[in-house]
Figure (cartoon, rainbow, N blue to C red):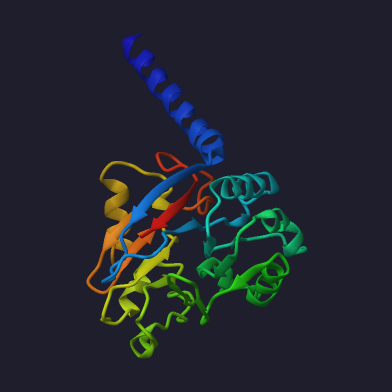
Length: 270
């Protein structure tokens, strides 16, 4: 009868949606370009291009060698000045050789910097941070946590994960402010740690996956309820900083992406 036919159509549509969200969209890789005017009295002499990658989540559902090769190829094609990996490298990873598992990233032809995310803390569970940092360093990816890198146009600073209690940016007040600060964190809520400064820094982060399953109204509501700022993805203006959040490339919780494909963000800072 008609009711049975409608139910069948709904079930078919739902099944197709699940198949798409499991096997199609998670295998995309988009590159989005965004221009960001830094909060500084003087424009930069030369724009700085940053490839922002986050939430690779090597392990249970994502971060396989094929995806890592595609990330490296896309970054090289964009020719950025530097590459920032904003944490959550892993998600229940194989306990084998992490350097071998991430090896495709060593072919990126730009300076690479990293901070770790809450999933990399592996709490509770076996400690992973030391082995992960050593593996990344062997591939030419520098650990930026607690470090400052003085570049020609900006200063780069990394901080630890907020949920792990390792985010500490209070010391920014005592540092030089003769050029803009670019701060890398994993969680965008880390902006709450940034003090009031002569000029607002730009903080880049991941963590949110853009909701991963992006449903009208519902996803934004969930993110507002589960975080301080409710950031989804994109550029946000906060009193003490600009915050750019990337939707990342990997999967956690459910092996699904819908309406929020894996993405690398190419930022042109000027």
